Amino acid sequence: MAVTGASMGIGEAIAKVFADHGANVVLLSRDTTRVEAARVRVGNTERTLALSCDVRNREEIDRALGLLLHHFGRLDVWINNAGYGLRDSVAAMELSKCRDMFETNLFGTIAAMQAVIPVMRNRASVPFSRSVIVRCFEDHRHAHWQRPWGSGDPCAPRHTTSSLLAPDRQGLPLPCTARRRDYGL
Image (cartoon, rainbow, N blue to C red; front, top):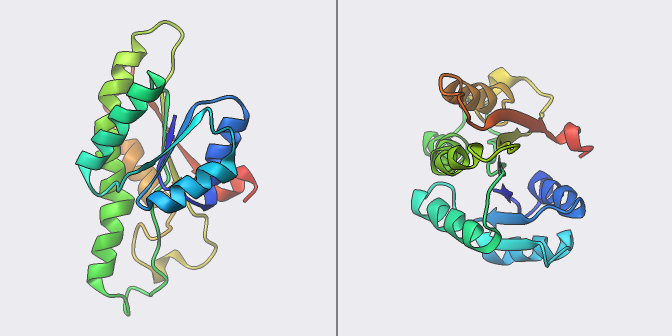
């Protein structure tokens, strides 16, 4: 399995839960030093691998996916956790920062899905196998209308990524979502 945005927070926590339960886990993050430190904190170093991967760059996603397959031989779960929010209101935010956020939160998620779905399709032909793609998000409790769409809004990435998979469900990964509270964080 792979977890993007795994250098801290919910990504690191998810990696730890899966590794503690015996899964092979690849932790992905833009910052190599931070993701390697997270790998050490997660433990189970014989079953974990830390790689640099910026989801805004499809070539980096493809490279990380190739290394994952080379190292562990298969991919069953891909967790799109990389992302961040803006604290500014829509009226006060810099549009360039909003665009940067969408590059990671939305387009990075879509790019990762486009990379892993063909791999998971091939895996779907194996009897008794199941592949899953997850999009994680923050569960903020303040007015969603005050910040840009997709900036921690639980509905934005979930509905976008689920609707992208909806018309193509034959033997494909199951889209699902996770919130911090689902993991007690």
